Amino acid sequence: MGISSSLNAGVSGINASGTQIALIADNIANVNTPGFKTSRAEFQDVLAGNLGGVGGAGQVGAGTRVDGVNQIFTQGSLESTGVTTDLAVDGDGFFMVQDVNGRYYTRAGMFRLDNQQVLVNEQGQNVLGFGITNGVPNGALGNIDLSAVSNLPSATTQVDVSVNLSPSAPVITAGFDPLNPALTTNYQTGIRVFDSLGSAHNVQVYFRRTANPNEWEWYAGTQRGDLDMTALGMAQGGAGAQTQFVVAQSGTLTFDTNGTLLSEDNTALSLARDADGDGVLDAPAATAQTWPWSGGAASGTIAFDFGTPVASGGTGADLTTQFGGGNFVRLVDQNGYSSGSLQAISIEDDGSVMGSFSNGQTQLLAQIALARFASNDGLDRSGRNNYLETIESGQAIVGAPSQSAFGKVRSGFLEQSNTDLADQFVKLIVSQRAFQANTRTISTTNELLAQLVQLGN
Figure 1 (cartoon, rainbow, N blue to C red):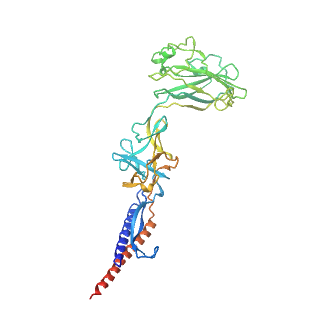
Figure 2 (spheres, rainbow, N blue to C red):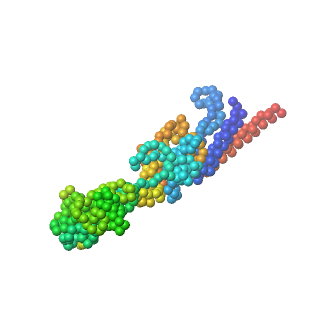
Figure 3 (spheres, one colour):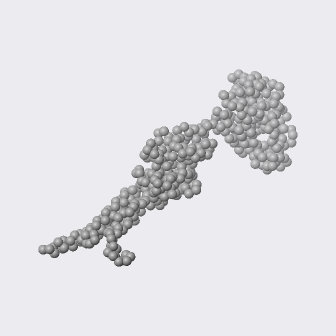
């Protein structure tokens, strides 16, 4: 150990500074790379030997070396892009992507739907998420494939009717005539309902004030051509009879002296009907209280809800009332819908991929999955913004965003590089000076060795 050891120390300093400059160059080069995490060199001194003595009194160093390169996994800032499929993790976790070579983990959420309607990243790797069973995530990882997504039709099973029926409406003494419903009722309103195939049907609800105080009858039905008349024990009738009104459901409403709904009775009313479709009313018969739709759809029942009557524990004033001011409709609603095609998607903070369909419905299609690790520092960079799981990182813990220790998913944002340019330039200056100083150490040692060589002359 002598003066020549300073050469080795200088060389180690040059090498270490060169590595540091290379890392800084990489950090600066990736300042615009989404999800990039800054790297730093961790230096370690090298001990050449001991001149003797106790403790560190006789120890001489032999320079430095880079003991390791670690990435700093601090949160990068989130930049708004306005693109629904651009995603950022706000907190802990990595997106999972997969191709034929295996599974990768990334913080870069530049995703898109490819020509097969599969969610992929810019490299064409499939983004992984949870499938949906019975409207909830099933925990099974797989590709987020929206190619076969559709919203199936749902038959109407509930109709909510909110009307005011005037107490001053005249009492109609003549019986209800389904061939002339408008002339034998006081008020009517319509609503479009759907059968099991998603076909729409126009239903009319007629209200008729009776001779009993505060009592009204209601009749709901549709055109003869919309129903399978055989199921109602009636003939289908000729072409001219297809627009004829046919009652499928009926009942009574009673009000108290305050005009609030006292009771609603869905018991079928007995009324005459045109059984053969010839335009002449036949003998009275009970209505079927069912809707046997035509066109191959399944028969169904519809619950008509006019409010929560006082007799059932309600206020009687939430939907249908009998107040002064004339007959008018407040609301008519139903729960059926036709089939729909996917029009747009949105992604929630918990990773839920929601689809908006042409029939006005929304549906949960999938859920973005995240992975986290016991040690992010142990992950292996594989390029293209991806990481690989290693023994040092620990096995991936898979879960849903916004749950447990997982961060939230921000749709329409990208996480930017966490490289601090000001900090990197300061480190670059320091590393440059360190490199120059180490070259000066070598040149100085060289001059001293040259003096020793001249001692022999």
